[in-house]
Amino acid sequence: MSSLEIKNFGILGYPVVHSMSPQVYAAAFKAAGLKNYTYIPIPIQPGKLMLAVEGIKGLNFRGVNVTIPHKTTILKYLDAIDSDALGIGAVNTVVNDGGMLTGYNTDVAGFLAALKEANFLPEDCNAVILGAGGAARAVLWGLCKRRAEFITIGARNPQKADALAKDFMQYGSVEGLDWNSEQFKDAMRTADILINTTPLGMFPNVDDMPPVDLKLLPEGALVYDIVYNPAETKLLRTAKELGYPTLDGMSMLLLQGKESYRLYTGKIPDMKVMTKTLEKLLRGK
Ligand code: NAP
Image (cartoon, rainbow, N blue to C red; front, side, top):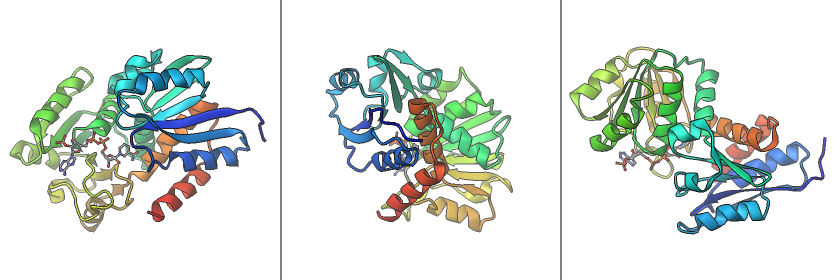
């Protein structure tokens, strides 16, 4: 089915030149016969965000994705915020309904859908999260929503891990620790899942990995790295060699894109097309 209706989309960020979203959404729109849907990178310097948000309304963009450094700042300029985005404190998708801008965070839907695809049930699990940045917030929110039993955040900076844990204590049982501490090692010994949310191992530093001893994990614990470039990080390779099941960051990335597409169009995108386009772009790097 094809549509002649014109709808414009984009990604707001700075810098935004390396984003793969324009090609991935363009491929999905084309596959759906949405000939007049366009998706462009929109570089917006910090300090210009309020004007850019007004611009979305003025230019009647149907929606935008939001990336670094605007994911948190944009909340105050929107008309409504979805409960996930409010809980996480960050927006990655804005939908424009006739001048009313609503902010969403689809990272959490992507994270939980990826766990489901991997047949991992977060309910009542003991989870260890590595890193205390933006992505850790979405992961934490998802685990709290699904009533994980206990969540330990391990980071190189224990103050940041502790502050993040305090932000989420109202939603679940969460602690923040130095990932070199004995207490953190004890948490690893009872973990059902370990999730890396640091960029350690990401291209081009593919020989890096978080400095934790995977051998402490119980047999069968899932090792999940949300880094998607490369899909198999050194952390995952090491975990596989030790016999642990693993999950890479590609599915979270694709499934958050699926959810944003659904919010924009009310339809489900062709996931094969999105996956193929993303894989081709990553291979070309
Ligand atoms: P962020 O907000 O900058 O947070 C990064 C975290 O990692 C911080 O806790 C930071 O610690 C820590 N970290 C950074 N470099 C480190 C190092 N060399 N040694 C130890 N810790 C280090 O970044 P983010 O937005 O959360 O993104 C993190 C990663 O997740 C990126 O690789 C991103 O591509 C990936 N991601 C994937 C998806 C997906 O869909 N698969 C979605 C979102 C993000 P400090 O605070 O001490 O610097």
